[in-house]
Image 1: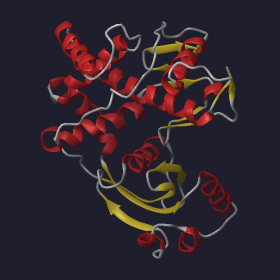
Image 2 (image 1 turned 180 degrees about the horizontal axis):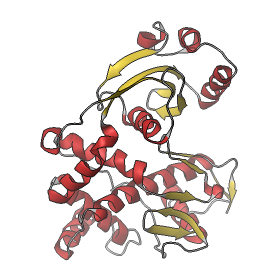
Image 3 (image 1 turned 90 degrees about the horizontal axis):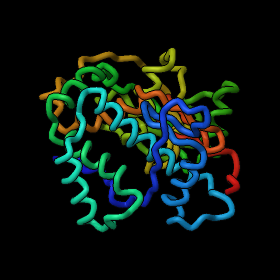
Image 4 (image 1 turned 135 degrees about the vertical axis):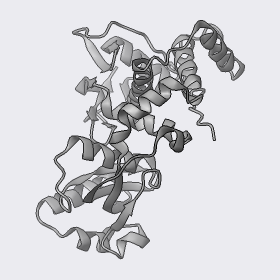
Length: 292
């Protein structure tokens, strides 16, 4: 099954500036935007170009998250010489225009680059294979975890505070978890292969295994938001396995490249727009509304 990256709903203005600028508001790999550029892009992406007096923090975090994910993936592909030709760019532009983008849209040039790179990635050619083999060790784990699932970030944060104060994880899972299957088992999810859990959960666990000194049965990750709510994840065991070879991984290899990209690209974000959590791979919203 071909992975389709939904570019067509992104009404974003992306203005490019040189990497390493002292005024950069965000840097992802070789891409950099200054504050004015990023604010303009957020307005176009989140508000259809109608600038409000203040920028909603959740809208800002969502727009910045999307920018990081796409730029990180494209940066990883470039590292392995997956670079669109002029013909590839023309084909991608035609795709976007045929799906509703105006030919003179200010978003079209950058989205064309993204779409062309993603079209190449979906072909699973030699460059994509090279990228996968380079980073496949990052997914060389079974995910041995327990979790507590709740409906709000504030509830998850409160429970993490209780755990930090010495509360028993299993007791809290039994009392508060909204996952009826694991909750009654003290949150235990056992050990499963990558690809079983939702991407946000998997990315958080793999990120922790890469970046933290994990103590099995003690290391907590969260809150991690998914379509099901907010997870507090405990890593119960470090179980290293041999990841599938590229030819055996199939389309799953490309999905994992998305995870590898945000785990391995350098990301810098001005606190005005939130903070980047490299472990879970998410932008935490800024502390308050941003005056425009």
